[in-house]
Amino acid sequence: MKNIIQIAKKIGLTKKDLFLYGNYMSKINYDYENSTNKDGKLILVTSINPTPYGEGKTTLSIGLNDSLNLLEKKSVAALREPSLGPVFGRKGGAIGGGKSIVIPSNEINLHFTGDFHAITSANNLLCAIVDNHIYQGNKLNIDKVIIKRCLDVNDRSLRGNFVITPASEIMAIFCLSKNIEDLKRRIGNIIVGYTKENKEVYAKDLNAVDAVTLLLKDAIKPNLVQSKYGNPILIHGGPFANIAHGCSSIIATKTALKLSDYVITEAGFGSDLGAIKFFDIKCKNNNIYPEAIILNVTIQALKHNGENNLSKGISNLEFHINNMKKYTSNLIVALNKFKEDKEEEIQFIKDFCTKLNIDFSICTNYLDGEIGCIELANKIINLKKNTKKYKVYNINDSLEEKINKMCRNELGANIIEYTDLAKEKLKLYKNKKLDICISKTPMSITQNPKILGYPKDFKLKITDINLYNGAGFITIMLGNVITMPGLTKDSNYINMKIDNYGNISGIN
Image 1 (tube, rainbow, N blue to C red):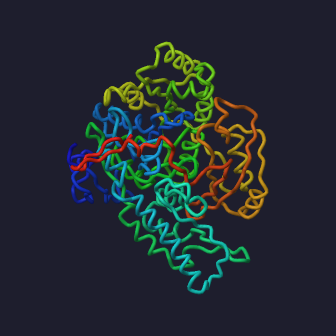
Image 2 (tube, one colour; image 1 turned 120 degrees about the vertical axis):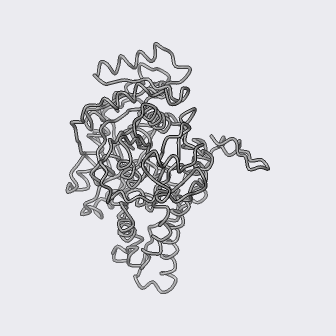
Image 3 (cartoon, one colour; image 1 turned 180 degrees about the vertical axis):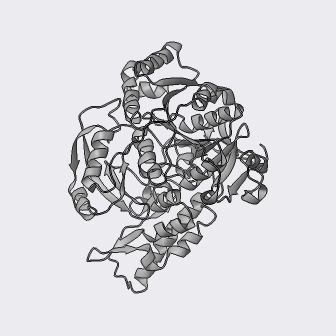
């Protein structure tokens, strides 16, 4: 590993711009809002619907960033932070794979610079303040508390009163805030509960805003690390895309745009969750827009979507192509190539993309490292200007109109139903002029994880509607999305080891 000061120099930063965490990790203290640098080009990496193990968006993002740097382009990747739940659970860490990884890997996968701990503490302090207010006389007459405590380790016994940290509203706020002032405003707008008269009670009513914010004063700065090849990576924030908006922080993205010519970023899960939310919640409200979308695909995921039949499963790719074509004139399908992939299977996907007039690239960065995305990197360098901009709905549309446009036009449902609870919430929030955030399984375009491929004419049932007023969106629940997962029988923690010298092994 190179000293992080050397990595910082690559993007024009000096030691005074850094808040060092040892020799290989640092916070960046950079005022992007007052920078006179021209913004670089933003490139979004998304994917088709994944298998349970994911399909390598992070790996591809790191590999593309390495290849652009190898071609002597000033490029930075802006990624999400790993959550401890998946690290110790089945999915594993979030630092890439093979030769396309971020280092120091173990530190990043575990405590990193403490951002998730700070977010957890800030959230739970607010909960404690609510509890204390009620105990000390309840001057605000809080009758119903809706804010929940959070924890960054999966624990199914805590369901009901706890959510996992990436599902907390503080995490969403953290990633959508432009600066400390905006962070304070959003924290103040959190609705912590209701009176008997159904009057909203806000965090600012409790005089809690500054106390909660000060726990986040260092965490709000983006983290700088490096790839295996010594290229700069910003890792900051990590809301889950099946519950929240699934993107790294806007501060990290805008900082990266001011420090480089290309910014490679990812959005969680498939394009039906992460990418749509990236455009609808993150880009729209921050005056940014990608120059290209890379649709990451693997043969194993296509076979999974076709019940082990590639020609049947490729319909899932067709759905994501159709959706993403609305957002960009620069759409590239990138095959994350595995060693066992057959040439005839690769050719089949390439021919499919050619028929749809979609650019196609093979990426071997998992095995080949920085040379594995050269073809894709050259396509990015030679891009024509994007000519499309698309939004799903207007902010002044009614809540029901927004839900209809999202569920029908973006997901393809022909019937939308509401539970009685969802109908009550629809009336309660009908006058809120906020974005919506779809919460559903990532394993299917529908809300049923067993329905694979490209389903047509299906029904979506809205089971609940939750207001995240500080984050600035309303979450539309499709089915039962678990906000406090449990560990699995074959979880990764079983294979983790640490020796007397502190050497760690077994983190996937």
